[in-house]
Amino acid sequence: MADAPVTTKPAVLILLGPPGAGKGTQARMLQEDFGLVQLSTGDLLRAAVAQGTPAGLAAKAVMEAGGLVSDDIVLAILRDRMAEPDVSHGIILDGFPRTDGQASALDALLDETGQSVTAAISMEVDDGAMVDRVAGRYTCAKCGEGYHDSFKVPAKAGVCDKCGSTEFKRRPDDNAETVRARLEAYHDQTAPLIAYYEGQGVLKRVDAMGEIADVRAELAGIVKDVAG
Ligand code: ADP
Ligand code: ZN
Image 1 (cartoon, protein in one colour):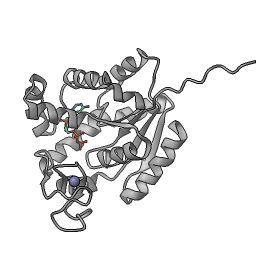
Image 2: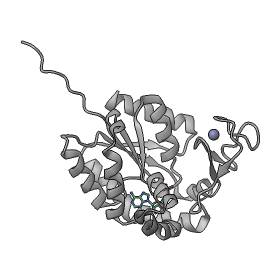
Image 3: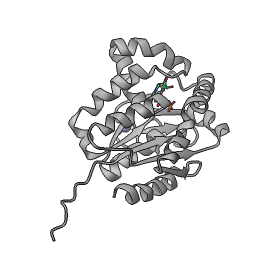
Image 4: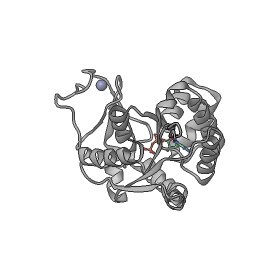
């Protein structure tokens, strides 16, 4: 008897963790290593703010205060992004979902195409270390490579290791007070999603306090397992 045709569905991975856990850094690496597409709602919202779209105008003050943008706005932005063709390579969601409502909306959206969450990976860190991590971070303005005042400086001061650019930028919400508000929003509204995905049987946990390369290796092992 002939085997049923194998239809591999694109992987849907979620990175869960507080600001500073390293979601963006690791999502970029998973994109390089596995050809998955990183979808960061934070990046999409910052782009909307920069473009001055209605969603961006509504989100700006909330983001600057470290609060969560409304589900309606975030979902509209995500839905648009998920309609683009490159997501068929599989996606890694970075910073989404962040509330119960977003998690159910994601399940419903995936269900429309017969998909579901492949794995939700909780990046476990000590809160105390996050303020220093976030308050010292900056990125290359050209290629987006991430750096940190103490933990990851460019090999040649002021020059991006990846692309040679000499321009860098810092996010306006990466200051100590705002980070505290963002940590609080994470614990109140996002951390409960760990139990939600545990209930679905798709939760994985990684120790994200270690070196970037070690976390990368641990994540790669998980991704190979569930989506390789
Ligand atoms: P971080 O994870 O370091 O806090 P992000 O870049 O993911 O940074 O998000 C920055 C800000 O954008 C958040 O503090 C919040 O205001 C807004 N934001 C991003 N994603 C979401 C989301 N899924 N729901 C609500 N607000 C969001
Ligand atoms: Zn660069």
